[in-house]
Length: 344
Image (tube, rainbow, N blue to C red; front, side, top):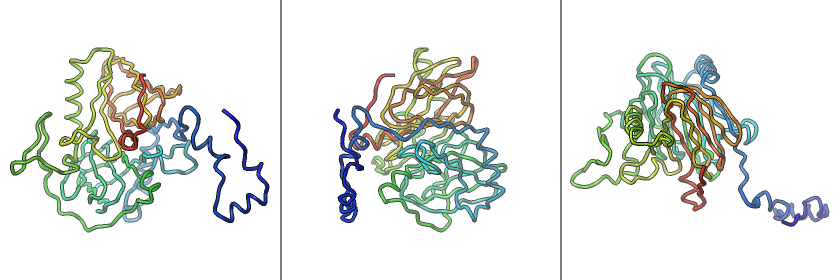
């Protein structure tokens, strides 16, 4: 491929004339915009150890009351995307959020889609458009775009969860904003979608709700993984997708989620995908090799894999299974027609 001309090769007076006219020559930047053969990514392999972030998050609870924070969160800043950025990848924002006993993270709604993976604590809930979603460790709670939501902690001890949002995408599209609201009057979460293959009928018809299921209980996900393991060959990864029970699509417009299980001592190479993804360890310990980098993880750790990277996971325990939840930006790429996968 031929070497293209640089900006410095152009006369100074010509560059000044272009700048005055709000014009930029394409050819000096063409290779960066359209890399030959494969895309470039600024997303770096990044590890968020729970033993490091938990004391810092609790310290934030001592230093900053809820009325001065609104959402008390420490955000994962991916070092490959620049200093002090608020991005885990081009689409995904990750943050660990803390709510202390008796606190309320006030009601609001916003354009970014969000999900919460509960890490620690008992007695809290997220109220989404009036539905009271209990929060238990490992649960996945959705707060989709435009829906009112607030967090209340009515138990004891710290309540901590991992926020997963498409905030970087909304910021890039100039569509990121929030609206504050009054406290909601909660109602019990409907007991629906309790069994696979069965969906409720309402007034003789199926639900047309974009988000019919807001809380995905970890205890149900774990039971399903363990049941699947009974019929899955020993050399295969056990993985289940979280889906909209009415459509089979990803739970959110822009983010997909799955639950994974590795048997004791098992190693697994995941299929490569063009979408960046993040992993949260619900229970267990092991090692991950991502794009030739190796990291060790334990319960409640979180780590990021760039799009296109080879990912290999290992369970370090000889006696206990390993459970993880992953999130990825594949729905965005699928909608744009640029999603790709490769064999591991």
